[in-house]
Length: 158
Image 1 (cartoon, rainbow, N blue to C red):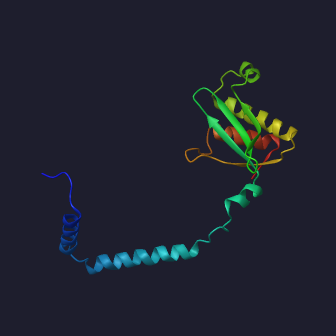
Image 2 (image 1 turned 90 degrees about the vertical axis):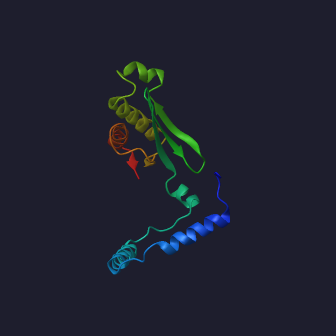
């Protein structure tokens, strides 16, 4: 038995399988067209956002907050996107912070990191920051603690 199929055999099999499938019943084709019309209506209703190239977005929101959580530590940094440099950062790995915290990985540590980061941002006169969440991050738990403590300390979130 051959482990591969030639192109001619494949096309012959697919043509045969296409011709042997029964035609759709009137109710099936009606359902298909109803669904098609419904999706077209929905697409017309949705108003797309203005399309801006990424190079313009960099300058509209220059400071971006990025958070990283491991099983041991919590860290957050604000990146100046036009120059791709770190404007300010705070982490529970810092020796001065580790000694004052009970745990370096829980929600309380995350809120403390947010407060410290906010103080450092305000010292550098950075009043507003946009938040960049990874796909798997939700506004819950440690992420929420960092963002809320930034907001409470006086940093505006875009």
